[in-house]
Image 1 (tube, protein in one colour):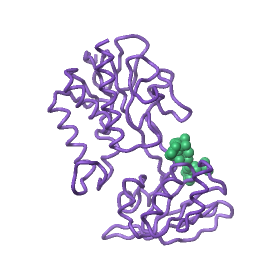
Image 2 (tube, helix red, strand yellow):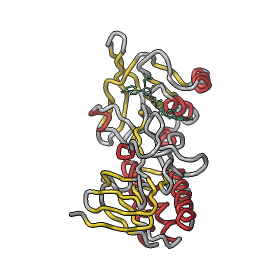
Image 3 (cartoon, rainbow, N blue to C red):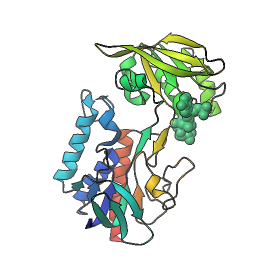
Image 4 (spheres, rainbow, N blue to C red):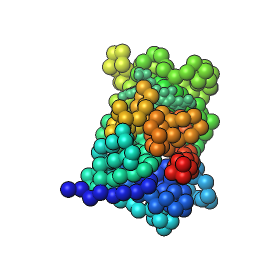
Length: 311
Ligand code: NDP
């Protein structure tokens, strides 16, 4: 039978939100237990250079940053457990969360399970991930300064990323599978009025073209969604912006979510629909999605838990 662990505060997830919540909670004397999940460190573990996390003069590596956060959380008194939570019972207090290894019983829980970028699933996309293929323009756009890039998608993310990249890159090609964008009208107008952005309507990505040694993207093969004809375009980078999936499967029916599965939190805070359960980071934020905003929300959640436990 699984061991039972009792704690005042359980933190689920080990990205910037989870570790920051742990650092604040541990320093407040809450003796938090943090369960890492199956992929400790979260999305930054698959990022290379990070240039926008404040406090570092030069670029740092995503995995290194997460290692530092883990060490810091541990040093201030967090118990970090490599386990994966499968089921939760938030219907009564204390709350119960069952993992592969232990069962956790907690007075308060901070959910920091994050989100994952959706990918197209092409082998060539996988091959060049981190070498010209990215899912985050804010993180990686600067590495394509003055170059030609493409963005895939037609939602708010894709359009915002294209506009953002147009200020850094020589040219941006937005590739969309239909002849209408899904994004807000105001963003569409901005996009269509930006000189160095071109839209390839009714096209999808057939293949990322590139070279080895050093690995780099050199172009894309596009396929028309109207007549299946293919053509090649020359680009140095590709940004896939076809949506994210929040990791909220186990909270279905237990915490309020929006239509896309993101946890709903109280405006300006981290309280979920269940008193004593808080959420921070990409699991509740589909707009900003940055390591630094996730960390900020982790801090907010810990401060809110402290107040909740005092009450
Ligand atoms: P969306 O789900 O809104 O859009 C995804 C886009 O990707 C769609 O245009 C879709 O095409 C396209 N797509 C999906 N799968 C594929 C595929 N396999 N091949 C090619 N294209 C594909 O995701 P977003 O990330 O843009 O936005 C998610 C949510 O976050 C939305 O609610 C959005 O409003 C919100 N958001 C808000 C922002 C803001 O307020 N500033 C900024 C960013 C996001 P199709 O249209 O044909 O379905």
